[in-house]
Image (cartoon, rainbow, N blue to C red; front, side, top):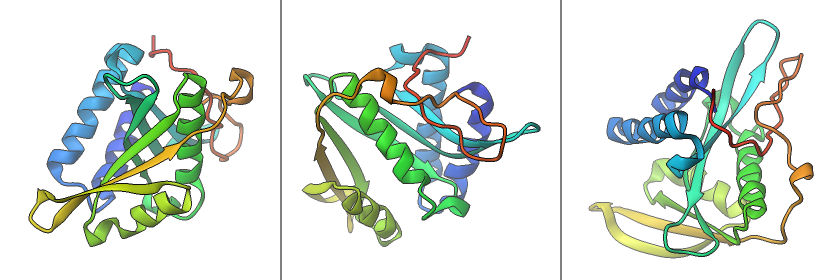
Length: 187
């Protein structure tokens, strides 16, 4: 993710319909830390966008990082996709990229926390369809009637770096850029 992508991610978060203003502000704080500090922020942040010769549009983004005090566990902090792209494979591509990147970095497990609210029903189904198992539930965590759901997935063998593609590679058409494991902060 580069600074020019920030407004596109903000648009996606704001229009998602299930994030509070405080949650959007928190997501933007993590993005700003990534933009300022890169990998030193602890928040690996990538976008998938559609690019043509005149412009670029962010289709979705993912933010994940190493879980403190663990050897090989990572947390998925944020994944969000433009509503117009739902069920179009963008979320799957972003999640697959995150999994491959964390395995490349030595990760063996990815944890995801989400809300039990009805507005997160599609999100919960997405995690289940992509191989995540519900491993925990904390009742009334976020507020009364809103439980915290914890999903986990153990990940396979290491993926060679040359097999993973770059989130910064551009295409001449409106096809999405391929995701690549380049985590260098913008210059």
